[in-house]
Amino acid sequence: MRLPAALAILAAPFSARAEPPGPLFHPDGPGAYRLRVAAGALVDILPRQTVESELRTVPQVTSDARFGLPQGFSASARLRAIVLTNQLELGGGWSHRVGDFSFGVTDHFGVWYGIVELEGFDTTAWGYLNQPGVSVGVPMGDVRFSLGVEGIIMLSQHVRLGDTTHVSRQNVSLAGAQATLIVENFVGERGDAYYGIAAMYAAPDYQAWIAFSDSRSRLWYPRLLAGYAF
Image 1 (cartoon, rainbow, N blue to C red):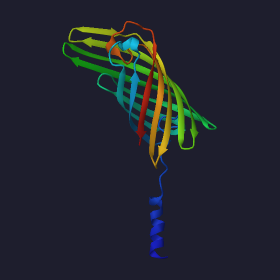
Image 2: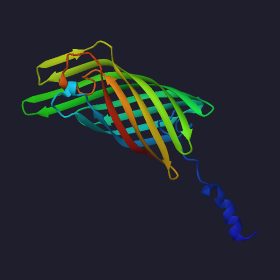
Image 3: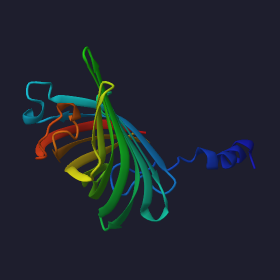
Image 4: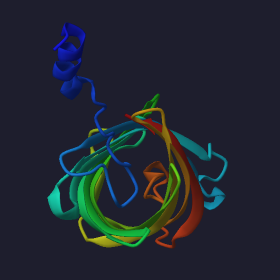
């Protein structure tokens, strides 16, 4: 056997292209023992009834991670941050495919923390939440479409004004829900660009806790998101 042919045979296992992981948000997930990590941003356009004359647009940097497990299970983490409101969630899900359609159920538990330090106004807030959800997805070539619905359950909420005043809500309450449509487009060998829009239906102080609203009525507002998964 000639030397070049022998080297080619030995190098074949190492030169074969590894199958890229699957999608991040689509119910199918990245596949068993595969990891997807994304960096992106989202923007909430809060309702005028909540913020009144204050700034309505609330941008946040985001990071999402999902690790595939056997039998359709997966573990995931989600981070949203902008100092005013920071949120970290850990959870998991299960998915099942029927033909071209994939269906999934998820549940995430998280903690949120916010801080505002202005002259004469020193405020911090924190709390715990749970977000159960369901989703459905369908492929179209290299594009994956996903539609998910999640509930927003506040487990507790605390607001501290300076060093003296501390307001707590310990009761479990349904803060609202969100419906999110996400489009994932595979780019290159491993890249995955995504963008989406969500319809949020939440109590005024879910995202804008600084408004200190006494109203428990829920309001609609949009959320835009985009990013890139590795």
